[in-house]
Amino acid sequence: MNTLLTFFIPLLSSSLVWSGYLENNQDVLKPEGWTHVGQVDPTEELELTFALKQQNVHLLEERLRLVSDPDSAQYGKYLHLEEVASLVHPSELTQKVVHHWLQSHGIKNCQTVHTQDFLQCTMTAEVAETLLSGSKFHRYTRDGQSVVRSSAPYSVHDDIHQHLDFVGGLHRFPPKGLDPNKASSDRKQKQSKVGIHLGVTPAILRARYNLSASDVGTAQNNSQAVAQFLEQYYSPADLADFMTMFGRSFKHLSQVDRVVGTQGKGKTGIEASLDVEYIMSTGANISTWVFTNPGRHESQEPFLQWMVLLSNMSDLPWVHTISYGDDEDSLSTAYMMRINTEFMKAGVRGISLLFASGDSGAGCKHLGKGQNCFRPSFPASSPYVTTVGGTSFKNPFKLTYEVTDYISGGGFSNVFKMPEYQASAVDGYLKTVAAALPPRAYFNITGRAYPDMAALSDNYWVVMNRVPVPWVSGTSASTPVVGGMLSLINDQRLRKGLPVLGFLNPRLYKLKGQALFDVTEGCHLGCLDEQVQGHGFCAAPSWDPVTGWGTPNYPELLAVLLAE
Ligand SMILES: *[C@@H]1O[C@H](CO)[C@@H](O)[C@H](O)[C@H]1NC(C)=O
Ligand SMILES: *[C@@H]1O[C@H](CO)[C@@H](O)[C@H](O)[C@H]1NC(C)=O
Ligand SMILES: *[C@@H]1O[C@H](CO)[C@@H](O)[C@H](O)[C@H]1NC(C)=O
Ligand SMILES: *[C@@H]1O[C@H](CO)[C@@H](O)[C@H](O)[C@H]1NC(C)=O
Ligand SMILES: CC(=O)N[C@H]1CO[C@H](CO)[C@@H](O)[C@@H]1O
Image (cartoon, rainbow, N blue to C red):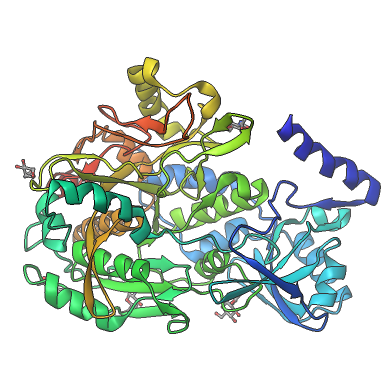
């Protein structure tokens, strides 16, 4: 009943007021934790992002399928940014209509990107509110961070509607960061009963995943990146200390090669440090970039800013790891669909995007009295990224057997259909566990299922403010660990003159678990109700929606992924 309502109201009103909502199911409510400061002054400048309708999205999708399928003759034949641009750039009509519309409102200050499918424009709040009817811009704060967002949905004239996917900068508050420290506070208590745990360090990861001292980067033009969208920055001094303390057994770099964005505002963040310290520990001796909080203006969406930037940079690292995620149900379908197309644009260029699967297991959404369902997270649920879940050691004193980390995000998308490459793997899982599956009303069996693989996510050491800190946990730890290993494999492929791995999933699923340590024990979090009693899904032999195919056995993975 609920879904019907949200879909019908916008349709009705659009025929009444001859204008339409671009994002008719976008959550516009202020999320918990933000304080309303007040309406912004009409003369204040805003910076909004217009996502213009692209052409040939189906051709782009088909192209991505071919370049990432190892059995295709097109495998590894990646496109340059200019080629992506000539494929997807908006039609001349679209560009004309949108430019004319903006100009007729006196908006002249716009910047485009290489692919011409985004426009970023500055205008006053007053002009924005006329341009996008219904919008009302207010300022909100949380923990010293300040953003400007619209408290009400916006619509555009029918003539414009068909030329835009959405407008960025009105909704979507920055999500709360994964809080790796909080996630671990209750296990700390659990484990203090068991005894002392030494925690995960680069040496432990390298031992568990069988990286030898000579498994470091050697290729000239290889690079990797982490992207950060929280109000925090990594500290170069902490990174250097971390490498001095924990990097003795392998050749590594102790400095980031390039920072893109505004490093320095905000505070040193545990998550920012975690990502950089660990991608540089598995992807050792590989040039590393940090994309840091690139949302410069209060009215911008940091994650969207990063996506826009990718369409404007022809020279990018091959592997990106990202710990950003939001509930699918808080985002408009139009937004997620378009961001998904942006992931395809990266994939056809040979760029691997790795997202953390989230730290709330299957998640839980309350539908009504005693009625719940799981709550998938985006971009983890996109079929065009590689999603990484989390594990922990079964016995904290042995580096052998990994089991599910109960926080490991996973489940089934309500937005994206199950892609071909995973259909038989997921089908296998559903059959294996049939009787033990959560009730069908909790998840969407036809959706994209995630994660794709996993790595340790529990009990990491990081260096923060020059001090080593234990007990840091979360899939924002496992993701850079896997990212660094993919970079090492890219490194070897580049040295052999082979194309990089690009979008990994079609190839990963064809391995059917080969070269990975299968994780078969443990369940992740779900809803705290009588029906599922705190559980989401459970791990099982082969692929599962908790730890994917499992964790990497590096030498074997290298061997199978080094074949043409
Ligand atoms: C894209 O890059 C060009 C220069 O290469 C720059 O002029 C333009 O402002 C950039 N666009 C955005 C949206 O930043
Ligand atoms: C990799 O690690 C596993 C478990 O730690 C070990 O049994 C195996 O012999 C190692 N080597 C290879 C090449 O798999
Ligand atoms: C580290 O990488 C550089 C290339 O960036 C290479 O010249 C050097 O040999 C590598 N170091 C080791 C120990 O392999
Ligand atoms: C289930 O997922 C499909 C896409 O795979 C979607 O079309 C459908 O609306 C989803 N159902 C619900 C109840 O969200
Ligand atoms: C992504 C990356 O690291 N690209 C580099 C490849 O090499 C050229 C020339 O040395 C550099 O300009 C790029 O930055």
